[in-house]
Image (tube, rainbow, N blue to C red):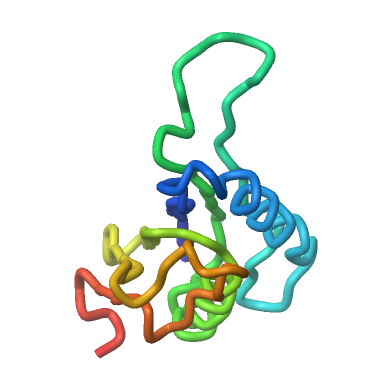
Length: 148
C-alpha cells in the first residue's frame, strides 16, 4: 500500500533580532539529518526550506518565519507511525518553530492530520542562549484519534 506523508514545520520568525540565529540553527539541523535512514525513514532528502531570493525583488516568503516542508511516498509507513512520530518529535526538539502539521494519506484511510503547537507561555525565544523546545512546551492534536 502506498502512503504519502507530507507537511510543514513553521519556523519561529517572530523575533526579527534573532532571525539569523534561528535560520542558521535550523538549516544546520536539517542538513545534519541522515541521507539514508532506517525504517521508518526521516532523512534529509525529505526536507526543504522556503527562502526569499536576495538577488531578485519578489513577494516575502518569510513573512513570520520560513516554512520547512517535507514529503515522501512510502510503502505502508502508517504501521510504523509511532516510530516515525518519535523520530519527528526528536527533530522538533532540535528546531526553533511555532507549529507543525503532518498529513498521512493512505489508500484506505484518506488524509489523517496531526498538529504540534508550541505554547509560547512556556517557551520563549528571548532566552540567551535559546533553550530547546521540550515536549512539555507543546500541544499535540490528532484529527482522527489515530493513536487510540
